[in-house]
Image (cartoon, rainbow, N blue to C red):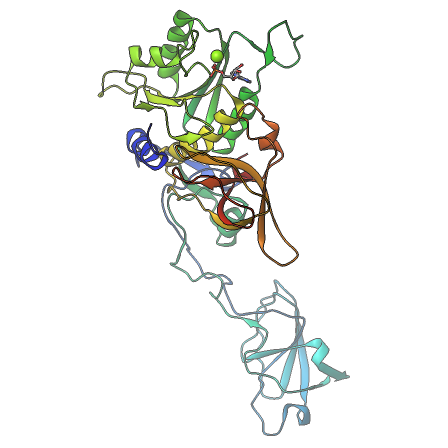
Length: 412
Ligand code: AMP
Ligand code: MG
């Protein structure tokens, strides 16, 4: 059995990544979830000019002697946001200014209106003030020429706002990987159909499809194939031509109807199978062609048990798909947390126990394992928010001990 980190390294080196030429141009509005192919450099300063952070008065603060409270200014004009008519603020003058309006020439400070008393056109200011106060300086959010988003970033809503703020409306992104999704199993029935004796509903298809889409993949949903070697061979051969990746569930262990591994071995090369993780031991992967010069789909053969399928998808297929998509692969972001009750474990496999973390009243991160850790219990994922990650050689852990947790709901 391969240790997890070794299996992941091998997988990442086998799947590689899209080349710099496999890019396309998208409109800003359609770019969420896509992976940026080039750094984006800001073509401008944000804000473009000094502007006011408050509704108040723009003036030159220290042009006369005396404390702020002793001096007066005469209001000569008003400037609203969006108004750029020329105004020159002379000594002793002030301009009524609104939030977001450009600071007029000659003014160096904005005094918020709550700090001002006004009598006709004459204002006085309360308290002591600092030159430059309440001015958002040009370029202080983003300076022209700065790299604002690095190549390899998957664009989210915050990036959309940032790109819009510098006026960018088209982006170069990697093409989306195509993934063929297949379930195997004679026992599988689709929701909406009556359930025959001996059957169960296909659940894997229904969580893998949205998880793949969330990763930015184009999914070819190929439904279910029976546990029949010829049918599996035909489906794999076709899928390998149509898609960059083939994701299957079921049929990878050593049962009498488990043909996925056999067919992968026949058509292509098994990279490895059996990773020392729990849940998820029977996981097979490899290229669906024997010819290394030929481009064909790469198969992730996930186990049939729903929890094993979801865990191996999150831990192995997901990072591989992210890397292939052009994203920078991040190490698992684990957090330390205190166990609210003991957990049982036998040394031998790295364990990903489903659990819930929360912040206790004392302000500590505390984690409680889900009551069933069986790999068939999908409710353990639906009702949890993290894995307790226990090292391969680790045994049981006592209540109160510190463990590492891996939040996972961002992938669902
Ligand atoms: P297998 O890996 O094919 O031996 O399947 C292991 C277990 O997972 C069996 O109990 C299967 O019935 C179950 N299983 C396989 N595929 C699915 C699926 N798509 N949805 C729900 N359960 C499944
Ligand atoms: Mg099966």
